[in-house]
Image 1 (cartoon, rainbow, N blue to C red):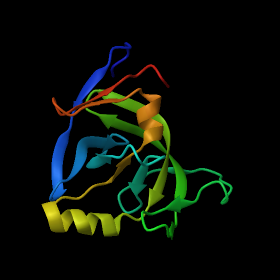
Image 2: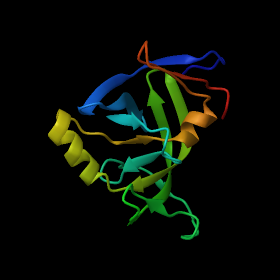
Image 3: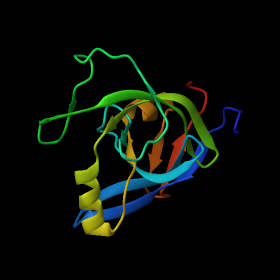
Length: 149
């Protein structure tokens, strides 16, 4: 585990989903047991995972009014706030994270159709802000800082 406060560089794959529609994918590991790929989504306020992907989590008590997830179409999406033990990107490990579980089936159908890939979640601005993330498009890397726990 990386303990000092130097930034960690994580490779990012930039894929073209449709013509001139680019998505940033980063390989991750959930709870030390499941490998997947996440989309870096600076427009997502919270980090979300596909409810069909996450096996081990703790439910968080929540006031339903506090958590309303909206899709791009504006329709409400059923979502659950949960805590996962760990999310890691290479040597970078973040522990005891609150994330949202939603059904990403439709998004994955789009990924399957356009680039034969599946994603397990969206890395949202809550995580990116907390770890002072920098996305270097030229070098295709995500730079994260550990000292913001």
